[in-house]
Image (cartoon, helix red, strand yellow):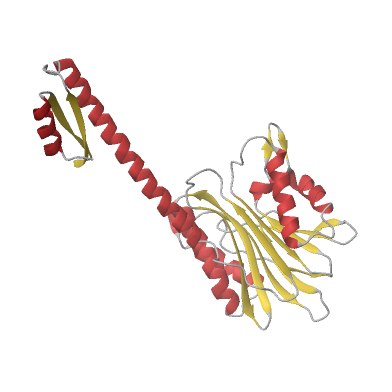
Length: 312
């Protein structure tokens, strides 16, 4: 673009009139609106007043777009920092995660997941959902994911990990948020199976798929975190045999709606029952396709799917 001075000089040469209006937004000049007439006549006063009004509106619109772009970039960067950069390779167990954030430029917070090595061949995994969005939810999300890793690597078992995390969330005071969380520990076995211990605190129950197509919950429901102080939790222990799948999801999956219809736990179990023989990646992909096809509208909630399978 030419500078205002160059434009004025050009207009003077051709004999016309040029008006330069600064685009001012929030006490900053972010550009110029330049109007020119090649003929030997001046702008009418009503045209100048309209141009001044348009310059104010254009300046505000441009600045709002800039601020929104910056906010979106910050939110997306922060959201990525709340999720693990990559999944570890778990010996003898296939692990796959699909994460979908609802909307464009969504705020941070919401659903999260993690899979990480603990010690002596054991791995921890978690999938959770913080109530709300924005900075307060993001603070709880970050607190939860990093506290889980720290406490698990200090040798605490599942119930102790979540009970201490519950205390940490309540310590946030007014910034605290309710949190549903499924946490588990996984021990791959030399014979090809895997032993798991899970605690399900207010979260959708994990589902176990056997080779014969049978689907059953793999944990008992227990209170969510961030509500009561003296929380006492219990864990369930079970074994994944070769060919078995453990499916963990957030409520964005089970609460997918089409009018008055909802996918629900039963719909998810029905879909999972048809996934025998599939790899963990194929199971996660089939569940996501079923959720997306359940309703015509785009999903309105974040969704996370964690699938683990012991190969045959």
